[in-house]
Length: 128
Image (cartoon, rainbow, N blue to C red):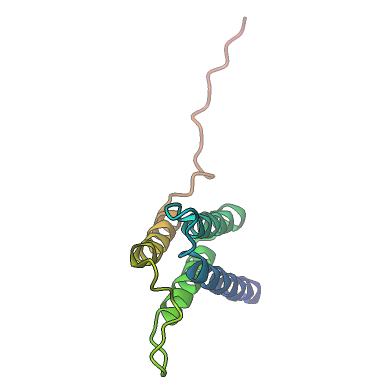
């Protein structure tokens, strides 16, 4: 039980890191039209959540990492005491996509059925 709790705390910490990195990087636009930062942030976050689900087989670890990502994004989107916002205001559409897609991807990965236990129907044996 303690080992699982440690895994969940580690997943939360890694999710916080990915969420913070994605929150800072999502507004990077190359050539004035390619949202490279958002693309890389979404691919990285999706890959982390998918790897956690596939390697651990545990929905709770994925949920912990997703909560870390969303928590970091939420904290960085708040107005500070001085009135500044760390979250980039350069591209509000990209910010909205970042804040909406991560929870949706997490929900799909957490809710995806466990297909590893699906059994095949026994094949009839045919003799030549």
